[in-house]
Image (cartoon, rainbow, N blue to C red):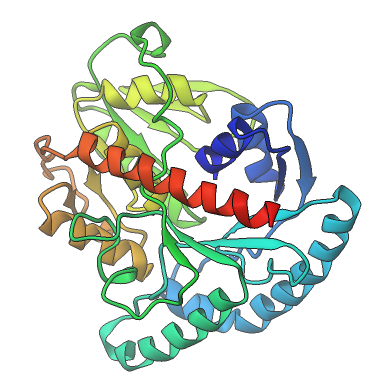
Length: 346
């Protein structure tokens, strides 16, 4: 959402950011001076034992409650701030009949495990009904064979309001400057993300394996809402959070990168031309699919969390068609935002 908000601000729009405090902290760091609204979304805590799709299924009544609640609250926010466009990231209740609304997702199809595969079509139909409530649905990917999301957003009958807007990355327009890197020595980088308790479980497992390995390992905690701090133990350096410019230089200067296979992380790595070892969040079928799909393309390597061990090898860097991907992305985003602007004026 940061690159989307940046582009819209460049087009002289007045930007309001609505999110929970965790995400507002990130926006305040990366885009100071905007208007921030405390508007948290549905944030389930996942189980240590149950697969994530099953954990989410059990929380369906709570999700429905949040959809109704956020839809009701959106009406007041629109009125209080005279908002005429709302762009939301996978939030089912933020549509309106009175203004232009945009739904952003890379998951028109939500993948399910093999034993529940027969339910995928039902999910597609339900998700399509949600998408149709919005004026536009933006998919951050490319429409052809050269894409990141595979069957999650391709090979489907999509509603007419869907627009592919290319890959989004907050690093794309940041000029490289090695002086911005927080470290000036050889290092590997671990990028943590996603829900607890799996985030902490992965951190502990990798710390134990990498603490005595060379070169040093930088762990990015992805916690902009916590006090900035740096800890160093053995051969591990841990940062709660880094500004985008410093984060870009640290990642780009890494020997190897280890990360979850979250879609935003993947887009940002590709914008830097970086490959990585992807470790999907256990039971999160979207991440498991993306990791395997991108490994088959030859862009990334993957390993399951349970198979992490001291003998695991790091993948060699692999060529990614970064310039071609990002040039197409810039054109698609420009076209989509032009259409959005014309819709608002109409």
